Amino acid sequence: MITVKANELREILARTACSRGKGMPLVTHALFAPTGKDNMIAIISTDMEAEVYDTLLPESGEMAPAAIHVESLTHAITGMEGDITLEATEDDRAVVRQGRKRFTVPALPAAEFAKTEYAQVNDLGVSLADLQKAIDCVSYAAPKNDVRYFLNGVCLQVGTVVACDGHRIAVCPLADLKMDREAIIPVGTLGRIKNLISEGRVALCAHKDNEHASAIRFYNDRTMLTCRLIDGKFPDWKQIAKPPTTKGAYVLTFAGDEMGAALSRMIYFGSALRMSMKGEHELHLLNKDANDLVAVEKTGEMPDLGMTVKYLADVIGRSAGSRITMKGEQPDTQQFFYIDGCDDYHIIMPVRL
Image (cartoon, rainbow, N blue to C red; front, side, top):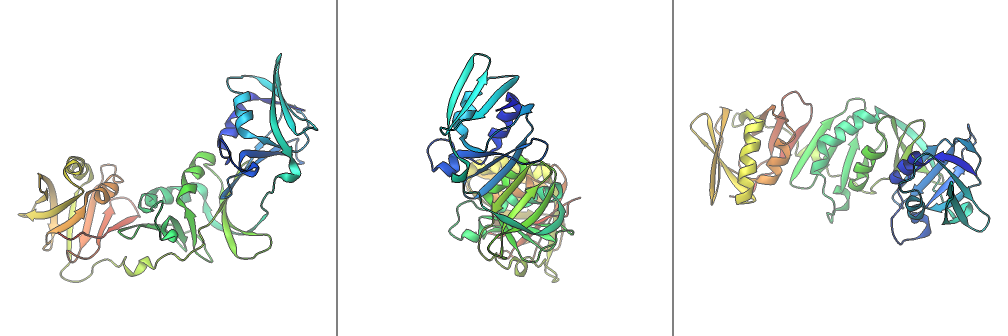
């Protein structure tokens, strides 16, 4: 039996990977087991795609290993403050007590919790904070349920983090990122990284019976998140990401907040728009029912372009009011967007007018 702070246990249970409601025992229970170090208790959970390893330091006592039903335990300690006791019994139950309050919740023998064994392959050479910042720059361009399953994530390559949905590409250089193979992190994992762990290291992992890296691990001294990678080959985006270099190239520079305000108006009137220059310093945004203006600085002759409003708004929304440079070559080729003061860049394919 261990004594723990109710709020600390509640916070850890909220971070578990367990499914709420009905499901296989493996995804509805979390394994509570001694780590063998300083009386620390490891709390391990999985949803079959990700495994969360967290630690809890009891106020006192020891506990036999057991897999406890997370939803039941969460409800049992709802609203409790201060110390509580938690005990795993021999009849596959766990008992929570605080004063005269007593709750019995379902549990399983620890041996029935099939924890996946991974071996760490190599450290990626970057801090979690730097990688998270790069992921935040590009993740908007990753689809969630594309039939091309290898696009449903953010791809880590040597020195680069990239996402692509077939219509747009977002690229963020990360010079210290060391990879011996590309790794595609599923979209569903990205939010969990930020919610679970903010500082630490990153490494690729392989199943203990296979040398091929099949998972990525985010970890620090007390918490670890191990996620399966998407098993697929990311498209050769570098063939598309070659900026225009010919004499026919054009360059527009404009204020991100002004363009963002215009797009927030235009999106109500249609999903696509025409970008058309009027004179040297006015860019018209047009569709059937709307006409808006944005002040620009222009180099070269820009033809009329058809663009998807949402794709433009996603890029402009990242500018935080900074100036944005747009470069292109033809109305039917990729358009490049660069935000002042940022290393990342973004590519959008035009639509037919």
